[in-house]
Image (cartoon, rainbow, N blue to C red; front, side, top):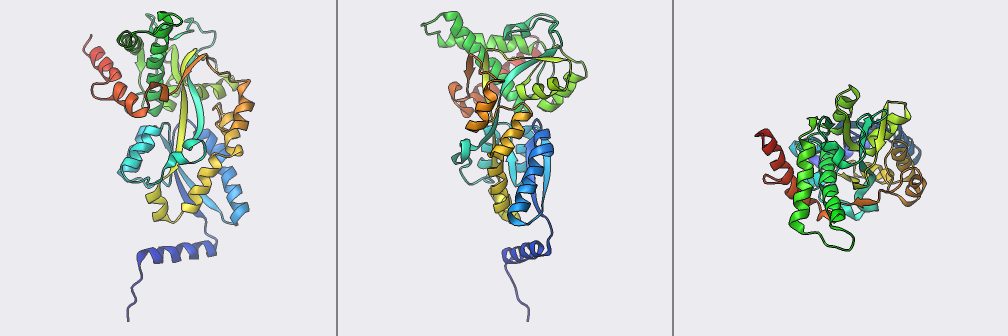
Length: 346
């Protein structure tokens, strides 16, 4: 007589047998490229020790790093990552809309955010082009680097920083206590973005590739995450950081991918890893590599060395991700139009 068992039961029995046999459990992490060192050198080994001490089980974490948008598209396209740690919440939202993330990932600690930063300038040692403010990036003869927003979440942050800085600068020009005309303000911001984009020398696929291009000697200034520059300067690379007074507060989220963790029977492991990313040990690892931590204790410790820019703004200040994504990167978006106009010589 043939006995038929549900596949889920068979999977559970196999998983249990593997655990009894002492085989390592596996978790797949899809992360954007910038924090690779934090994960590989500090966080993943620390979590493996934590899990071993807690459960007696070994855990193997298979990690993949790439541009945030590309990682999101890969997960939607079939890459069975259990945890997605990406550059921007919009990428996690796309995975949610595809039905792969079914829980409210913003409901947890720090609303799902595990690290933060600001957009800054990296310049050559001695700052030979005298770059101090956003307008300096639009000067003739200044070569600018930032990646492509079509593939890179970091690039989206960079473009948002330029556009938002333009809004802030327009408000300053209007004068204290005065309300700048909305159309005039937006026109100024769009103009600043176009003048800077005209000087962009290379747009790589990811923030990490953009920094690598800069390290090869291409460009006078790179627009990137502050945390991309801090470790390099600490290791005596010939760069300097300039944090403009008008810049955007970057928040990097994480979520487990419900469909995949249930399929792989690793929900407990994925939940523990996500919780660990919010903990002090992981936050300290992010801070060591130049990120601005999001927990209160770690943030207070980092505040002295990473002061808050005077005119810092957030995505919420610009209307939220849906609004700003459409306004800048949609088919008729400001950045899209700027690139198309420049390609046509306008």
